[in-house]
Image (cartoon, rainbow, N blue to C red; front, side, top):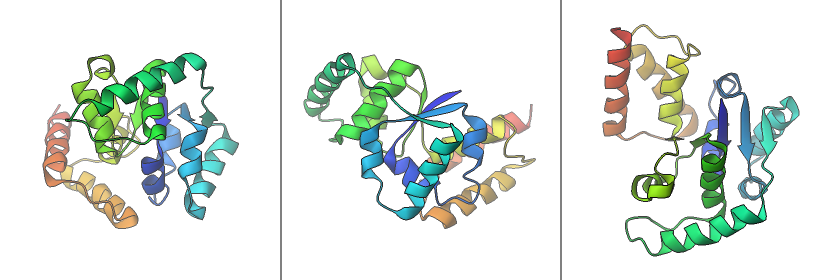
Length: 183
């Protein structure tokens, strides 16, 4: 499975005790060099360096055609009041995910709004860390027999990263998992 990873996801995920599961889930992760420029902490740079060294993470070869797509999308985002402004690297990641038919790993609310409100990007799959954890269960990389066990992984993630998930999103995830466990 292909993925694209943005800076906000990297910054949190690199602090998670089970961060190695990401490389077991995705065959290849792509990153734009401008995303790498956003990383400042030693921990996030070390994590990315390890993924690059293992061949899991690859730099995306940006093209002139995609630069034109960026300029068009940036203009459309700016004119849509339902979508908060986005930094250039975040928009680049969205374009990469669309063009690769890959899952975008992002915590950015603006990215989720583009997918929700822009017809050309409506088919892009975007996972936050919560959806990533949920999909790790479906893939058998996080073994659980109850939603309480999943909740333990979520609480560990929140503790490790300081990123607290909204209760409504967590409830939706737990509902999907409960249904899956009952099959």
